[in-house]
Length: 100
Image (cartoon, helix red, strand yellow):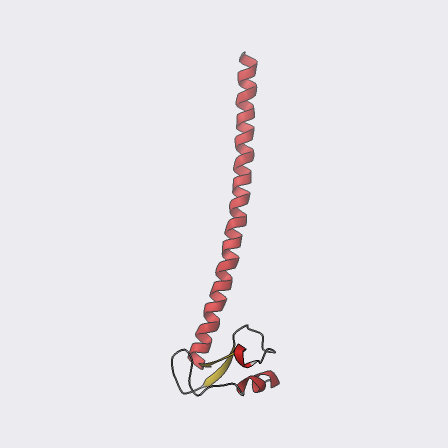
């Protein structure tokens, strides 16, 4: 156990704040900074709820990264399609102008 964990344990409550469980209580740092041991940053969670909380946060971060990737990929596709459309349009324009 790190000294930071020891410092955070002084704020533990008697039950899990998520499910009310009484066993295997852990200190969860709400802002995910283990050095921030202020009482308002510590949430008492049982091991199961603590793991679920971190899994949910990891999932949210991954989803945000995927959204950014999708957005970036969409921009690339739009840019490529736009360039292709401009090339086709200029081809039509030159064909049309050569017939006039």
